[in-house]
Length: 380
Image (cartoon, rainbow, N blue to C red):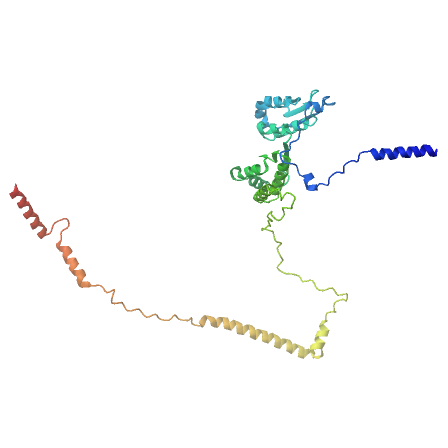
């Protein structure tokens, strides 16, 4: 037994001696493992990955509004053609107002039915077929954000939804460029198609806008993040110091009451007992007076009040007889010598004007004209 056990130990030691040592995994930085390398693309799911297909048939149906019926009827052959490439059947029921997608025996991609469901959802939410068909690609996702229940007041909801769109759709266009997403605002929902990172940003902007935060603040933050992402050194660092910190200016302050009640300091002892009428009379000495003396004091107090009221009334009556203060008399200024009118010169002008006839020549002018006419006749 001892020999066999020794032999077994020797064999075990021999194995351990000749076994190749496995290389230890290199210590990598966690930020490198989390970051996706540039230009990396997920390989497409082919039939070779799932040659046997699916075991069960899956189907999804969704309703669409009446105003989408004409458009869906027109583009439905294109929808069927796009889904048939992935071996998915699509049916349009105009009577019930619904669209249905279901897998077939040839379907090999298990996730394509989810993408087909998203396609019919987007078509029901007024997204055009050209944009909705992009959801069948592997690197594209969609998000339908419900905004109808976020604001109670209808007018306020319409204003905030219009703020999201912007003047002539400029705000929506800026969001699309920054997030690489297609955004469609329709009714009580916002449909978004694009990469996963873009969908997250758009959802945040939409929800903040409905909470009365203007989208321009989030757009500014997205623009700064876009520039910071270009720098490879800043990828692993925190961006908080670069991002703007906006404060709410129009904070509704609570209205303070006119009469402020100041709370007294707490004391374990009860408040002192108030003085009674007898105590007050004892302190002033009225208690020991006779009835006639008390009556005389009351009458004197009444007479004093009456005299005071009478004097006030008399003062108010005398105010009417007080003469008002007169304004000081302003002496007229002497006429300046520069502005004096020359009467003689004006008389001469009037005489000359009387001698002249309107439209007729003067005597001297007539003589000169006659002489000029005679000279002309002699020359001839």
